[in-house]
Image 1: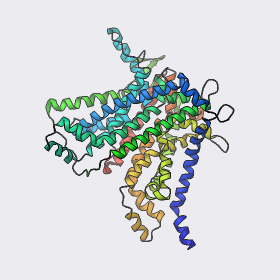
Image 2 (image 1 turned 60 degrees about the horizontal axis):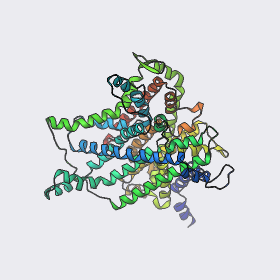
Image 3 (image 1 turned 180 degrees about the horizontal axis):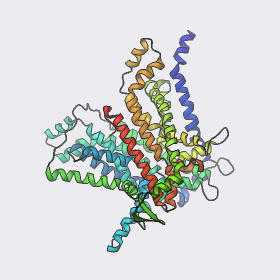
Image 4 (image 1 turned 90 degrees about the vertical axis):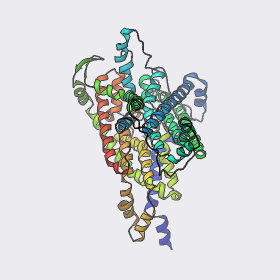
Length: 551
């Protein structure tokens, strides 16, 4: 009897579940909890609501919340409108070069927003290329700095994100619904707004919430071009690293408000989706409408224009990386000097970036694989709790995450701040959700009877997992892991707070160069990152081609 109970409750997966819970508690829950507790303390450590009172009564603080909400709402509406429009065109019409355009959209999605911010400074800044080009003919471009520039960068970047997910939803519509509407006499315009769009509304609202949270949490873009237009992540950074030694209580308060706002929006969206959910067979996807001549040109033109504008920052970075610098200005002479200087002065930053990201992905794959299995196959044995904790980093801004780790791991019993360990740990925890969600999607489509049949034949559960289940999960794990690796390369929000001189990374180096008006080295570093992203996307696309790819 004792042996049966022991086999039931102390098996391998029970131990894995307990280990995962301990990991997430130590690496995530306790740091976040400590940050929230500090928001309710004064300078002497006593309980106080003074920081919250100060935030909501002083314009300097609550205006940052207004700025973040304004930028988030406008960026979300603009990027969603453009992304949905382009997704509909690409999925429903025979657009020229459709597959190439999809790849380019994905490149725009994976490039970090702060690279776009830096590029637009080069193009539309006070001494920018386009600004100087139009000045002699009397055309004055609007300033790229402040809220206008932030919204521009977010809209361009996040429209690629909307396109990526909404296009998949458009392709998943059962064409019989639209055919039934057509048979009832509905016009194409009416069919679009009464059948097609309502069916994909759950996907659109989901992506809108994610887009809003990304714009709310982005740190690098407002820091580079916001100037006096402060947002919540920038305020967190300033509050913690102020000139007078910082204000931990205020940093915790701003962080807590940011996280509560994100969680609240996520809950509202989930409640809405629960009431507006549609299930379809997807056996008859919509047919692509064949256009010819000028009509095909007209539907292709807006897609090409937007892809060009969205990729203009990356193209600018690549071109300017080969231009020789004359002080803070680019010359018209091509040179490899920027790369020579970058490799000489930032060789360690390049090495750190790829080393930390690669080490992090090893742990992401290991932890993510076990977490996804526990989340799907052992929901009642702690899987739901593990899954909830693992997804928490999605609603925590990077700057907030960095401060959590500084507070938690800068004193005994765990002192790892300023080391490579804290950099890798932050990447692991922040990028786990990508791999977990990708792996869970594959695992939920696998029949549990495969595992049961193997175990019933006497194969141990652990061997069954690695020989059968894990092999079938490889496409999802690979896709999620490479996307997590790309995100790790781009990470700046938490890295800018956690790095030390001996652990500096490429995004931190790029930010430092831009802040010092050293655009040549910044362009060279940005180009290296872009090339790495394109290579990674090519690899994962080939690895997942049989399962539909990631595009």
